[in-house]
Amino acid sequence: MSAITGEMLERLSRRRRFAIRTLHVAQRLLIEHAPAREVSVQFHLHLSRVYAIRAQVLAALAAMNRGIEMQPRRLSARRPLRQERAGVRRFG
Image (cartoon, rainbow, N blue to C red):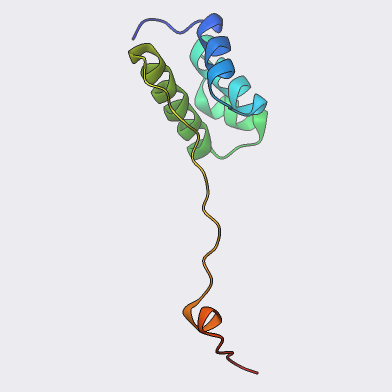
């Protein structure tokens, strides 16, 4: 992949719903080439989260360059327990 520009991040933000803070972290990491530790201190994030943001944004940029539409992950609703579905109550 070629060098990442602000225009690429702007296009990515229009196509995929990243949080504003995530885009700011990505800008500091990928465009301004700030060290990950410095970014983690600046944004009050764990270092592992900073690396995860980098990986997510790079994967989304690579998919965008290949023409693949990536959808954000959806969290499924909590499934009821079998006892709740069967109408059996415990502890009561």
